[in-house]
Every structure is written in C-alpha cells, then in structure tokens.
Length: 457
Image (cartoon, rainbow, N blue to C red):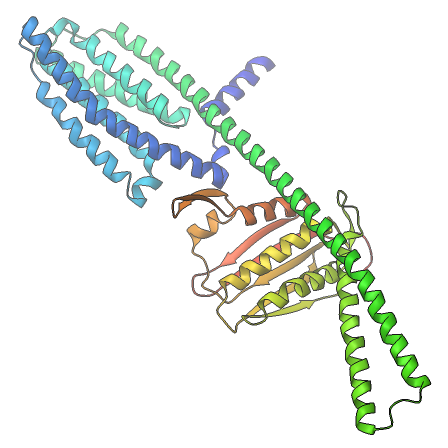
C-alpha cells in the first residue's frame, strides 16, 4: 500500500510540476523555449499544408478519387504567419506557451473536421482524423515545453472535438458510424503523450539546472581567480612601496636631525619654509604608509579561507580605493554603525563592494552623491549602496543578475556578469543581494550578511 501511494505521489508530481517555475530564471527559460515553439508551429502551419496540397494534387492525377476539402488546408499558412507575427510582440512572447497550445487545438480541430466532412473514402475518415490528432499531439509535445497536465488537457480537448464532430458527421451521412474502440486507443495515446511531456519537461528542467550549476562553478572560479590575482598584485605593490617608503622616512629623519644639529636656518622665512617642507614630506610619507597598511590588510589573510573581518574597516578601505578615480564626478558618503565582526573572504567581498560602488557611480548624474551605509539588525549586517541615477524598471531588475551575451558592433560581449559573480560571492558567504529601484528615483543595492557571535567593536 505504501509503495502504491509513493508511486501515485510521484506520478502526481510528474504531471503537476508546479514548483519548478517559481524560479524566475527557469520561467524565463520556459518563455524562451515557448517562443521558439510558437515559431516552429508557425512554420509547420505555413509549410506542411502547402506540401500536403501539392502531394495530394499529384496523387489525384495518378489515382483520381475526387478528393474534396483541400481548400480547408489553405487557412493554415495564414494561421502560421499570424503565429510568427504574434511571437514578435511582447505580449505574445510572454504568453507563447499558452498560444502554442491553443494553436495546436485549433489545428487539430480544423484537420479533424476537414477529414470527416470531405474525405474521399468515408470508411477511413475516422481513422485519418485520429491520425491527425496523434500527429498534432506529438508535434506539440516535441516542440513545446508544456507541463504534462497541459498536454493531457489538449489531448482531452482534441479527442472530445473529434468525438463530437464524428457524431455529427455520422448523423449527416458523411461517415458510416463511430467506433468507441477507436477512442479507447486515442485515450491511451493521450496518456502516452502526457508521459512523453513529463519526460520532456524534466529534461528541460535538468538541462537548465545543469547549465546553472556549470555557470555558478565558472563564476566561483572566476571570482576566486580575480581575487587571488588582485591579492597578489596588492601584496607585490605593498612590498615594493615599503622599501622606498622606509628610505624616504629615514631620509626625512636624517635631514631633520642634521638641520637641528647645525642650529637650523637663521632666516625666519627659510626656517618656516623648511618646517613646511618637513611637515608636507611627513604627511606624504604617512599617506603612503596608510596605503601600504590598507593593501596589507587586504592580503594578510589566507586567500582561500573566510575569517572574522572588521567590516567597517573593509568598507573604508574599499571606499578609499574607489574614491580617487571618481571624486571629480560624484561624492561617496560612507556611514557605518558600530558593526560586529563578520566572517567572510575579504578579497572577494572587497571586489564585490568595489563593483557595486563603481556601478552606482556609473549610474549617477554628475555632482551627485553615492551613499554607502552599513547597519546591523535582526542578527544580520546590511550594506546598502544607493545612487541618485536613472533607476530601473521591473523588467530590468529581473534580468539584472542573469548573465547573458550580446552582439555589439559585430562583437560578442557579456552582460550582467559582474553582478552575477557578485551575487555568487555574497551567497558563498551565507548572505544575499537584492536591488530596489524605480525609474527616475535611483537604485539601492542591499547586501545582507550573517553576523558573527563576536562582540561589537
């Protein structure tokens, strides 16, 4: 009994796979495949009837049967052109699967009616109309990423239409009669097509998941490689700066000692100038020393492991790295509450926050402000990057983290890969990233990270 219940549960889940399309990216893939299916059905409606009329005309010359009703096939090319035209419209693209199923139902009914009411051999008309239904079902199953229950409903509609039209045709003398045994066979074919649809839908889902897993693995590798390369560069640069910085500080100290030992400069103005020079030199050396310390903080942790990190200091370091390149365009306003330690990979997250700041700067108008806020609440740390730019509509927000390729100036270029890798890096730290935006009101990117049990500093 338990085995039977398990089989029934699995069968129900296969026929009604409702949860899969809650993933917006998978739903977008279904829409893409459905548009292709609508184009395929359009081409079939356009080409096959023309070929059928041609073949029947040639056959009629060799073996005349007085075939009637070929005129009904001429409607399909126009229906095919209409289907392909609708596939170009935004509304048609967003409802492509439903339209493809409706087109299949329409095609099956027209083919059934033309066969039952205009067949040259009435004894074979019912069998021929049933064959048309089978062909329509198979084409729909193969071409359309339909859910199994949708194919089952389509089959029920086609079989019901065939049964009703056959009874009318029999009453009016177009065919000898109707055999229920034939419909028992059609019901079996409907179940088989439903099973094929379940296999096809599962194949589409597994292909999507495999593709996503591969992309995520490539993204993790890309983020890791970029972070490692950036860390190596920072370590090398900090090492190279340390040596001349030490020489510079030593030279300043020596000059100051020599100047004092010789009694300084007699001229008050020259003495003031010398003090200014020493002060400026020490200030420059201090700035270089701070830059070196910042790069050392960036590289002194193991690249492969996550560690408790002072997030406020990390954000200040990232801001200091980005700010010199953008200060002539926008102002970066950094505000942090007292934050707890957060366990993360500092190199990866530094790259993430730098990317978000750069995106906000690019989206901002000149002389505006990009805000970087960090707060802690409800057991999580939130980092918000806000701009005052053009904003994004709902469609653009849905595609923001979906990587894609585009052709621009004859070259294939990537799109949204930076944000895609940023989201992957954040999720690897146990957090998430979201976008809030309205057209004309700017955008806000919210990075949520789990806080550690460490005390606030």
